[in-house]
Length: 192
Image (cartoon, rainbow, N blue to C red; front, side):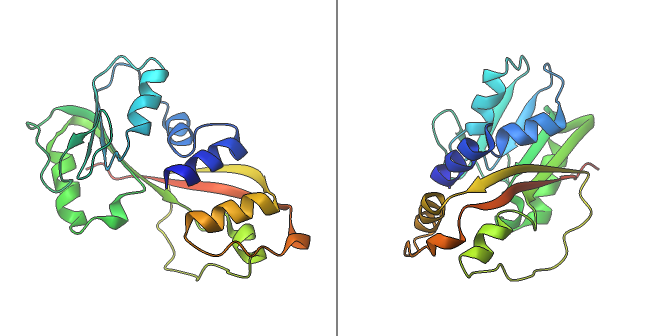
């Protein structure tokens, strides 16, 4: 996923998805932030790069550099420790979403915010359609609080790279590219 995000960041001209999420939320710089499912810590590093002065902690069961090992369902923090808890592209992958949200709310200070984000239905839709692999329609997601869309153009080389990140053969029908497409992130408030 890191290589795919770097590719999307290059096409969008900004850090994807962590930069897009932080731009949309415009967090006050002194807030204490917990990133659940932080992976390699890109969101934590992006906040530091932006000069965020509050405490920023990332947790993940298989953490990268600067991220603590922890489960979303059993956060190793005292009650009311953070002002903001973020679940970026992770909530749907958790075995017990209800328990993870309960833990997020437990470590949240009164008046704090819990935010979730996931790719939206328009995310790279035109590219997959051009590759002959339209995404199967799923359940309609709930109405997001914020939607971030980054227009981009996908070339045949980009399409080959994208297929490779999914472990698929890089057979790209060249005459169909370039494709005007978009990266999309839906952001929901999950606050109590």
